[in-house]
Length: 205
Image (cartoon, rainbow, N blue to C red):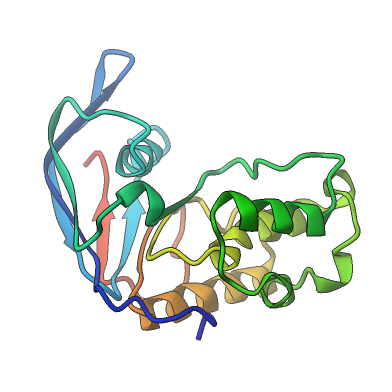
């Protein structure tokens, strides 16, 4: 298990007839899917097909040109979502522990910071500055916010980028634990992440 309390309200995400354009080009149109508590939706497709755009639209960063995105049994979607993009968003001269403490305060985290670092294999690196981390370690640090401040819906853009085989296994286990707690995961991937998806959706086809 993730160590978080199970999400009792059983959130759901419903996308209906979604159309999104970037730079005047329609990336996808009429896209519909639904995700219930415990679901993992894997977004697949070629580069430029719109996977990242879809993730960002779900996160509320981009407005669709048509269709709707509805979060059910969630009073404030912005406080129920975790978005981890393909960039790690780290401060080069801040330590691993400083990042963890900052995210805990920023996101109102009630998770166990030290346990989160341990789960991500970062406990022994807690005093290391972000600029001294390997790419894989930096990605683990970016992902640690998922546990530091538990939220029911994870929106992940290429979450396994830079992770080695052990890191990918760790990420797969985190996804499965989150699903077991009643959370939802939507991830844009280049290749299968590991967990068996509830829905594999090819974007832009």
